[in-house]
Length: 240
Image (cartoon, rainbow, N blue to C red; front, side, top):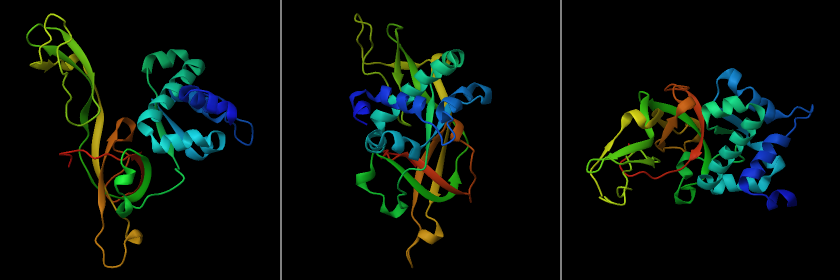
């Protein structure tokens, strides 16, 4: 554990992926990563208990600061993929992590301000789902005044525009047009998850949360299904 703490977050998670062994001696995540191309996966499923066994401090960091540590962990997964299958790593250029089995389950009605921007796990019943839609993840904008293009990473449902044109001779604040052919989109679906009957206090109406599913997670459950969600809690103005 002392050695793990001296490493950076990318190295720590890569150490976990490369070194974790099952009881029968199989390198569990090296095997999963080597199978990604065969199965056409762009994601890697990680059992949280395994990470706790190897590096409990990093597991805590993922829960408390997912915005910082999930990205570093995905970088580590891509590094390990380059070792196991360099051709596929070059093809997909990113590995999405999917976690399973957090140490604690949060009841929907107990979610509060202390959960914002933290990684949590909730159980519930899917009661509503939207059609699958394109979601903008990387937008390329063209300045109408000079024609210069600029790329802006998109992290919210509301489109984030550049603050100014990057051309030193322009530096205008707009207007900008989105260049759809050069921008990047992923599949996206909104769902609503409601409390399970067994979690309801007597005489109380069920509470619910809205969630955003992306990429391989869309269309994996239907209204009426019991589901377990693991994700980051957000407050989004105008999100419904």
